[in-house]
Length: 173
Image (cartoon, rainbow, N blue to C red; front, side, top):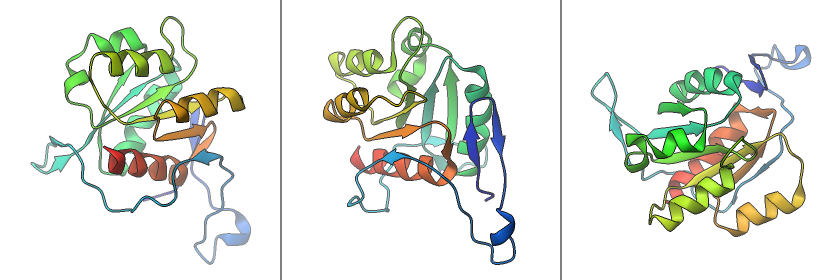
């Protein structure tokens, strides 16, 4: 798997020149997940085309570039992915009952990511959530984690940071 640095609008694949020979990768990332969580996963799954069980991750983000790039990355991680441009679109889909984890943008037109998370809780749906955002607002981060979000990742983020947050979310399920 090739590491990625996901940036609004594009996926960057790179190895810093100083690390190219050793194979080590270096990325800048800010992430909040609970480090004490084990790395083994007990996941809800859907059947992939190969017949193997693959967890379904749903991405809800109004940014088209994120919706275009994340499914490929999540597929490389071994997940099935569905993308939605709004919270309302997700709520009207059949994925509400099938999702193993949600990756939600914080700020979207209409219903925000935290509002969607609260609506799902009100409906009795306990789907683990990783919030992604370009907003560097400590109050928002603290509030979402206090409400029970499994992770909070700032854009741009590395594939390693996103995968760690997803693993934490799935373990918390």
